[in-house]
Length: 207
Length: 207
Image (spheres, rainbow over the protein chains, first blue to last red):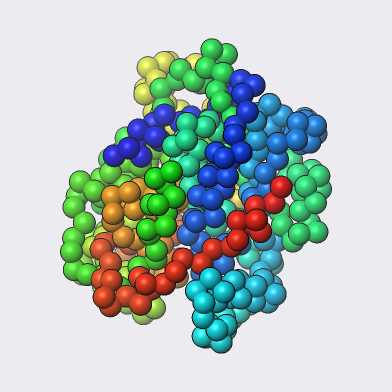
């Protein structure tokens, strides 16, 4: 299967060269993320694409991840800080539009979602939304690798600073994980030569 | 890009036919999950493969997801209930073995992981481990679809019952999300004909 090759090709790049990832490729990666399955289908996260070098520098200040400043692009996965009635309504509206059906046809589903999601705490909904974003991260890693674009998934960043500099609070979002895009500087990246270390499959899988 | 086609092909199957997914295909799917990136590389989750119909029936009792009982296979994503010194040690040992280097060469990384992970609460580590499992779910959805195996990702199941029937507690694991595998019964699955509803890309992506 081609996917296994693709997954073996990728690794978490530490050092990028200065080559820029084309807009066409970035668009394909975000299109793939947008097609990712999420619980209930509500897609409770958004992707912020950053390629402004000044902004990247600010975002990366003080981080041990030099990739934040140095990569061609940063994809910031930002999850809904909560799930509101308005967001459920907007999701139902969009679904009805895409499927060319009246919104009323989705009334039952809307009620189910409201009962399920609005009775949870803000913290529970944010945690749940974050997990959905991680499914999208799984897609993004594969999409980029298929296009031979290198990546680094990162949790070690200053969430508060990201939220502030990207105006996420005003959008009801909070940064949860980031993925840098670019091209490996294989010569100067010690990690590029390391063998991928994974669990033996018979320990990873339990029957 | 082939991946976009693959992602468009898949949907959350409600009704499966009785065809069994081959062991070869299940093995490829779990191999792909095992190659998924995780934070720090520790892979803080395991996959339980269930295909015993009696067990599936028990697991699915009382659930609105008939797929639990009816699918060919169930993949249960089970996250570490906590991160312990032993688990970090085992990860370091395996990494050294795969890379054919002495464990001492990873001493600094081991110390870093211990400082980072052992100072968090059990709850924080479980939540973090769960998120890593969701990256693997993203991979699994794509791996299955590439093999034209249908799937249903599900959160709506009885976690406590799964943990008990699969003896997860003894293994230091807790079920977080499941993915059924099988083949769609297109004739009898009303969802098979529905247009995939996703956010307009210019609303999903924020520049």
